[in-house]
Length: 219
Image 1: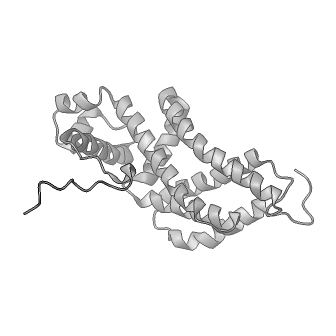
Image 2: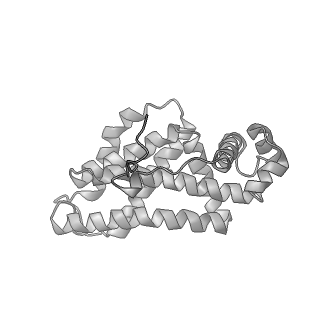
């Protein structure tokens, strides 16, 4: 029997304490998962709130208690999708050359396309940012953190001579993002693609973009 006189163990780091999952958290997650299924099947504009309620097996009144509109669900999913994309950045800080780190992050991003309709939803989120200012604001806010990390790393690698000193880090980052997002789209168009076989080709693209060549003219 535990000794009531002894103090309870305290976590060494407050960050290690996982907050309890409440019923509200579970219901919200249930709705979002149902919405992901509907959106990946019918698109943001093709899926209705009725379909989401049916998929979640909840009444419209119950769903509206958590999300007042379909746009609110879209915004929540857009945030989750970009947070997931940002989480793939963890590999960027694990060491290695800049080419290694960018390739590692790129492959993690592509692998995430297989998680809970992530690839299809990323395509939807990117399209929705063009039409929906609220989604666009959330999208760019989260993406900006990743962009800033990339630009800073490119500048540092230019200073050490690792990559082409004549590159514009901002435009090089834009091109890297285009490669990643473009491959994500292709994986949705060609779902049978073996993602792991893409790694050497992704590495070649990154090397071709960033490494200096004697015959390369100034950009």
